[in-house]
Every structure is written in structure tokens, then in C-alpha cells.
Image 1 (cartoon, rainbow, N blue to C red):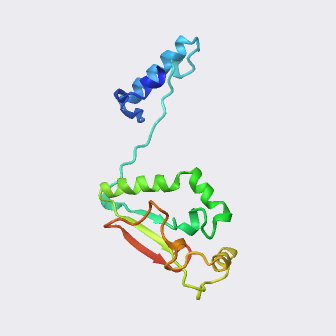
Image 2: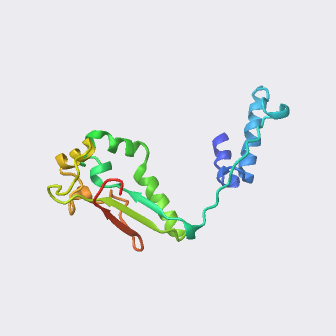
Image 3: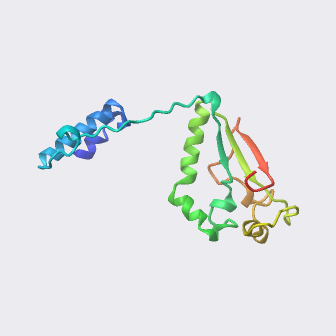
Length: 171
């Protein structure tokens, strides 16, 4: 019954600062009181005021950058899978979260830019001044035209998106 009430559309998602949030907070306080708990909030109440900073983004001044979310980097079977990156990406729902955010940005007119690290076959010109770069060369990762250099499934550029192919790390 508790979950049904708290999940009801009446509460409008319970987003912080909304009427639904206030209703849910009062409901939760009433349940604590009914269970015999003592209030520990401000002035003997169940609540503690917390100042919140609201940020409103101006879509005309925003852009979303999707950087290096390529098969070799975050997908099982990719060149860098042994680093644990694919597992971490799964644990954090990276593909699903980024996909949803990109869809929201597009719907609000915010440009989406995909930045892909691309290496030419044999890695000519790749500076080997760090172990990471040597790993790129040794694994044959992120080579132009290969599955590994492609964006992870679900994060493919859509009509209207921009694509940047970089030849240097952190470019």
C-alpha cells in the first residue's frame, strides 16, 4: 500500500520542491509517527529545511558532447575490455543514460556532438608517450572503419547530430 501510494501519479514523480514531494514527505512523516518514532527535525518537526539551488539551462547556450563511447572502449569484446571499462559502463547504465539524455537534448533543440577517437591502421603518427597510447597501438583498437571504432549500439549519431573524429587523445 505504501509503494502504491508513493508511486501514484497524484504525486507527480515526487520531484524535489514539487507539491508531490511535499505530499510524500508528509505521508512518510505520518507513517513514522504512527510507528512511534520521535521527530528529530527543526523545531521539533519531522522536517529539515535544505536550501536548494535551481539551475535552468538555456538550450541556445548548451551542447551535449558524447565522447569516446565507442565499442573498443565500453563494450565487451572491445580492445580495452580487459580494463574493466565495459563492466563499469554496464554497472552505471552508461549507454541507456547517455541515450536518454541525448534524446532529451534533441527534443529541446540542444545540439548533440559525438567525438570519436580514431586511429589509422598501424597507428602511424600515434604518439607513444604514455602507456595508454602504447595500449591503443598494441591492441589495434579504435581503427577507422572497424567495429571497435564505431559508437556503442544505441549511441549512434542521429539526423542533425554533429560528428568529430579526433586523432589525438583528449583533443
